Image 1 (cartoon, rainbow, N blue to C red):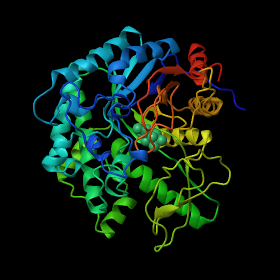
Image 2: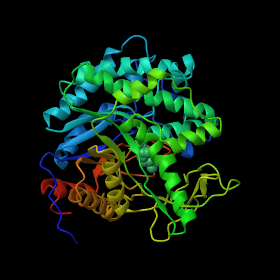
Image 3: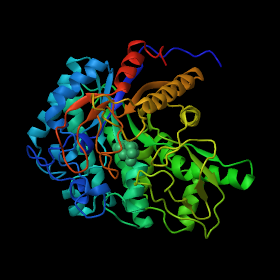
Length: 476
Ligand code: BG6
């Protein structure tokens, strides 16, 4: 075991959430509907038909939630702003009551010494923009996103120093336009790559706007990174793993960090008549919008093997919560994801791999020379509230302890890591998996069928993280 460096003094010990998954109050105080408010009402789209109408009622219970964050000792809290609370129609009149809610939340955090990390966009585009021009499929989204982003920068940047532009563009674009598991529920790769290009432009334009306003602080996207392995040393499989890394990671992160699409993937897009329309000025904007850090949401690694041209296609996630029900998936002729025999899996078939986080952080640091921030990491599992109101989530403690240690190892390897945010602080709605797949340090008494009491209970992991933060990582 090599000697580990101590966590830097400024290291942020955080936890994260997203508006739709915690807030509830879906039509309160002038909020407009988002695409998720409507999508969840289509029968069969979410587990047991769950929605975020009430979620865990953070909109009303935030004072209690922030008090719990303070009791735990969090130094940062990452949350997202619901665009349609600020602009109910996406680009029309501003809704003061929406700004007021986030003012109250941010003031409460700042008062308790908790650094707010604000995500501009965590998947909940205003329905009005989807109806008006097809949301991300139109270039018009870039201007509207920038107007919304500027409103937040101007209003909050006296108190907010860390901004995340976009959460997991790779996930919302792929599930929105390829697997159709997220809104708008389309299966059309040509449209997917065009929408993705607009998201790239919106990301870069928001970063440029942030700097042109002279806002203090740091800004960057959060990418869902599942580092790719080869199943073995067979060169065909190694090539497949490199393909997976190019298609599923470099295709997004190269654009963020270098302002360029990776040539190998671009060639594939051209060959398959899938390349998006790119204007000459786009290249300039993408080069200007290089972030201050790369946000990384890390849950698992992916293991790859050769996939013939007539091989397996698109991903269908295990949303059943029954281990072993995940199907093989891939991109024909490019790669195929296979089971890694060396790793344990969660009940939702996600490989558990702390070393993968160390590998991923190192890859990002050496390819992009950017600091990284772990903006999400956590374990979704069933939890049980015992008769004496305890939640003994030792499995979550084990997972988080190993992963936080992997962060410390990456720091010791020379990677600059700004902070570590667990997913999540309270239990919350898993988009497709309902309320039974829990991630929090704080258990919330509700289930698929009913919002129940919404009472908060501290899990065993709450006390574990409290010690980690109190010792600045020495108890890991
Ligand atoms: C990330 C998202 O993809 O993973 C979160 O940013 C999400 O919003 C989390 O909840 C866990 O995913 P899931 O599918 O288990 O809820």
